Length: 531
Image 1 (cartoon, rainbow, N blue to C red):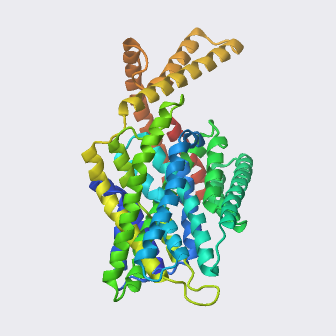
Image 2: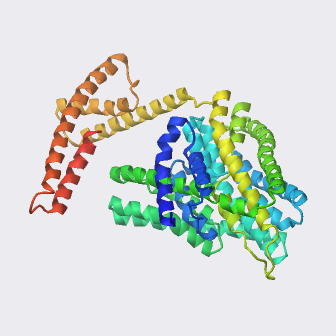
Image 3: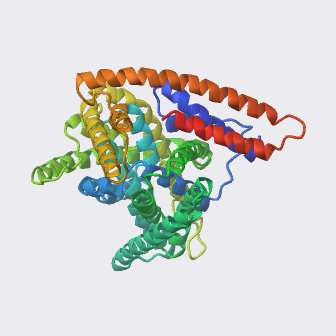
């Protein structure tokens, strides 16, 4: 098996793991990690030859962009306090605790190298957390906090990692210089992210065509990441800022095709890249196996100690942090999404799985120092890092569904229905207001005006069937049955038309481009008939 065949196998696994995970009630990223582990143990499977410096730039930008599309800037702003406590403060605390323990238990490991180990295992993976949380039907407030933590903690951890590596390689460390580097990294990332977001927004308006617009959205996160890194800023933060800017300002309510096609496209990208990322985590196990040769006992002991620190520091931090957030929340007038019970806090604790960023940072540790000597403890750091990743991702990922069921932590479906109903009412009222505005300008027959008024009601009723009184709901249900029958017959007519046009594609003298153009017209008609 060569590298290309292995890559295609991972892509196939990424697609198949989704329905298999749904059937087994297991997260697809965990299944892909297990697949990678199995492949890594097979003799005929080659080692992955991806330069460590390319793993983060290749995988993180699209994953971050896809994750941001599911949230909004206002959601982050509303949850800034719990996100700060998890994404910034907890990363610092975890880094310090891991560094202290690693420096003590691993013989000869310098403080700077121990800090690098702490930084690379500190951030939970945003993709794993959101993928697992999304499948388990957790309360939206927990998903929001996990998304915010996962998206922002890499920023803190990667900067700490670079500072620690620089100190280990050069042998010198300056706290003021490190703080200045952290501040400059954030400022550069914000500037690059906002500038690229603004420029991309303008380009989207100029392109017009949905295909070109979607292609641009694929390039933008990579450009944001690379440009920020070239200017010594945080590539992760730059991608987040760019994606949040576009999510806030680049949404055209009337661009239906772009929205539908873009949503499908990014679902595909998210599925494939997530599968590859977690498959690579399992495949990179051979690095850990190679470094532990002959020293399995002591290295497993070191890895176990660091796993215990990572897991229990998160719990020890979450319990008082959640209590403090609740106390502060009670004094505020605005809503803030926080865990409301110890059960939700336990689920948040057990959702702290490590993943792609930790793998990339572990493999990116330099081989030598500035003086040409070997980087101290590199093999031990790589092995411990993979021990933490595999233990948290596989053990916690496999047991989290069971824990959620046992603790009975579920989304509040009633409040979700109420919010959906409120949106349906707003949508119907907006449609009615617009109809009245048109009636003031255009003279509409009474029959047509009544028909359009019913359609305005239908806009909301199709979103929330509970809208309106019983008589109007019954009338809507009758119309819905009639419309459904007409839509079914119309769909069969369009299907017959598509079959006929497609058959003409293989006829002698038929121009495939014209056939495809007519077929696209019929496809659009079919899409509109489904509304």
